[in-house]
Length: 369
Image (tube, rainbow, N blue to C red):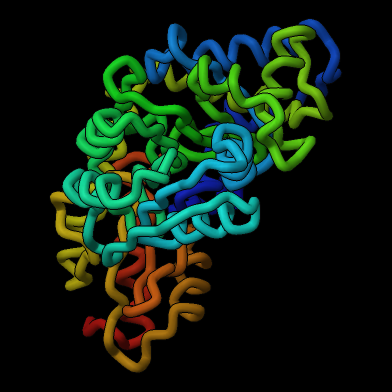
């Protein structure tokens, strides 16, 4: 197998380009001026994607996306605040768990895994509980690929004078969010998703006024975004050892992102990937879990074949042997598996993976030849 194989059809880590991997072949000093310039350039480019330079700071953080979510909750929600967590999948539940562990007061509103939260739901919940200070929403819930109606929900939250925290882990860079049109206190994303970098770094777009008022909120030294930002502003450096190779890879990935045509082009390619996937899977008789209207072109969930000869582990290993890595389902009620549409892949490769899936299901005698 070549160094680029297998192809990862997962929601991150995902398949990266040779250029992005090559960028990690250089060692950087964490205090070096050139590396500090790399970090500054990175934050500037990330802010441009959401049109956020006027209103928000980009605060990078070592670790996975979940680290950044925890840092955002811990820094921006005061210790006497209360978070309404909107849940329709595993990552909404994880966000509620973060609030619990951090000792932040919270309430939850949960809909079915194939049912978006609505603005009307949020309006009703905020009318019923004046103690809520923040609302936390998963933009695209990675456990299914469902897209929640962010603009409508954000408008309701603003009308109530509350603050919005967006987990945009799976959507940032592919689905448009304009910080000047959608009011939010924080939007959280990571390096190893739609920007097609490698995992190891999260980042939080924090409202400038909210971050300035957040001194002393954090439960943690390492995850204090107020302190991280203040130190970077003063020195240009990360407070603690940065993921230098991850930063360099993301900087290179952003160059390619802009060469491709930025967010509109990235969205168009992922949408074409998703369409090719859906069409070909449909020909095999494999049904999508979500209706098209609420399916984001990020990751797609499929009902597992009902045949008793189908076992996910065997299916996964056989597809992997053909050069493709799939993702297990994350639903509690029905058996599913997931196929990512993101990463350095094209529609032709999506058709190739479905052909491999068809071959494997015939080999397992789940599909008739």
